[in-house]
Every structure is written in structure tokens, then in C-alpha cells.
Length: 295
Image 1 (spheres, rainbow, N blue to C red):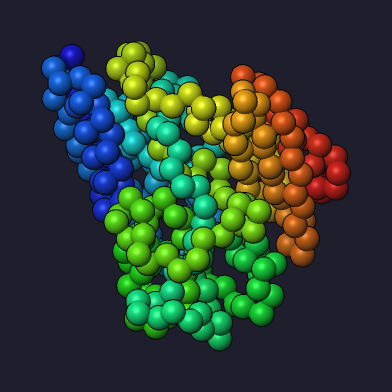
Image 2: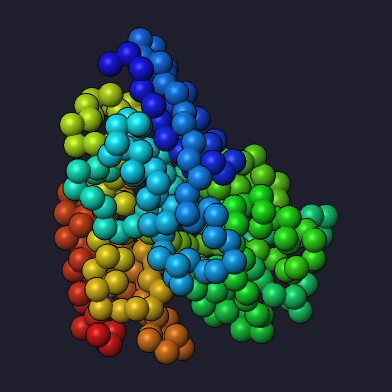
């Protein structure tokens, strides 16, 4: 193979992420030409409704996966946190890039240094909203859809007093200067796999092409976090979150689920060998279910 097509969403952030992967692969394999092809996804087109009401995260990958299955693309690049927990066996995740900053951040309107808490905070994530209200009970949150640039425009026009966004996305866009405050993972537990990019391909894809790009520790971290969220999704319809780190070959996973009435937030943690990442995620989820999650 001397030519490969990398498929991406059309948003600026998605293109930057795809270009990072293209450049890395071009450096590893100068004998292959890598082309980026863009697709507009259903999730990018429907912006007036929150994701949970129109089909969830799968709406950001459906068109890309169809291109892969048709043979119009060889590799997909996704923000791993935007991928559905269930993936098709014929197009698995074949690689994961090294995780960048996984934290959530507070962004204020351009030029402002003081947070106006009388205005709503924009976030379409219940995970973020509920944890933010635990820190600041007096604030109101409202959904905000659209890509990062669109959300910032809504913030700067006065619609919101602040936004809560992912640090990694802003940094990749060169907008780190917009970050007013970083939330530690203890303050706001991130979305599973936040900061990591997933590479998806057909089953016959030669994974050796990704040596030097695929990060094994991020892969184990992602498997633990996704297993936790996937296991809890089977029993709890409430928001969940997960965050793992690896220290001395041990993986340490912290998880969150919310009571069905969304009045209580429950946190727990587990640790073990990184090779058993998925089992640890499932075990923590099971323990938290048995501890009071109503099925």
C-alpha cells in the first residue's frame, strides 16, 4: 500500500487531530502518501437538541464508519471520548495516541477576568454540570451545542457567563490562552478517554504501521475507563465518568455515577495490574452497582 486515506469530521478540531496523526504516520512511513478526507456527520448537523435526545455519541462517527466499511477510507481518527461504548467488530480500534491533558477547564468571555455567576454556564454534559454544581451550588447550567469555536462565539456574545470545556481540545486548537481555570480530576472527574485519540480501521488493517504512534499505557487506561462506563450503562441511566492513571505497572481507576434522581454523586476507586484494565473497570462498576445503583 503506497496511499492511505484518513477520514475525519469537518470541524477545525477534528481536522487538526487528523493532521497530527497524518504527520506522525508520514514521518514513520515516508514511502506512503497519507490523505485526509472529511465528512459531515449527523451530530455536526443537528445542533438544537442535546445528544441524549437524538441518539448519543454514535451520531459523530456513523458517516465515518460507513466510509471505512465501503473502502473509501483506510483509517478513522476520533476523539476517543466521542466514540460509542459499543463498536462494530469488523472495524475495531487499532491504536490509541498518547493521552494529552485530560482535565476540564473553565473558560470566561474574551477579555474578562472575573466570572459572572449570575449568567448560566454553558455545558451539554450532565457529568460536568452536576460536578460543577457540587463545587458551585449557586450557579445555573444550560446546554450549549456546536463545535468549540461555535461555543466560544456564543460565550463571547454574552449568552453565557462561562463554559466548561476539555483542556485537550482548546490546546490542540491553539486556544490555551482562553483557559481561565483548570479543574483537577478530583474536582471534576473527566469523561472516559478524554484527551486521547482513537484510530479505527478494518479488521485486516496492518497494525504494525502504527508502531511509534500507538501508546500502550493510554490503551490500558482507555480500556479500564470504557469498561467501567460500559458496565454501568447497563444498569444506571445516570451520568458516569472514569479516570485512570498508571504508576509502576499498576493501573489506578476512579469512577463516578450519579443517583437516578441526580441528587447524589458517588465516587469509588480500584487498582490492579494494567494488563487487567478492562476487568478492573468492570469490577469497579459492579461494586458500585451493588453499593446502591438502582437497576
